[in-house]
Length: 72
Image (cartoon, rainbow, N blue to C red; front, side, top):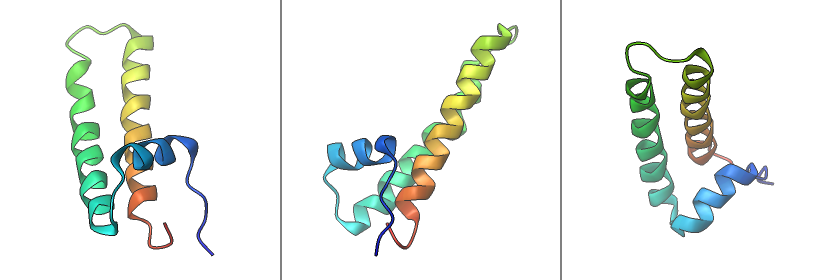
């Protein structure tokens, strides 16, 4: 039995309407976006802004991991 996806991962999946191959491609795209989030911080960020940006990157990584999971 498949584990249910988180609401965030399910919303992304529903919006994309993928096949299983597309799930891997979507996960790769989310990982690429996550890898770029630190570039948004800049040289002198407000600590709360930096914290939020890093949290957003982490969320993208977690959604990608769910989409790549074999039981998903």
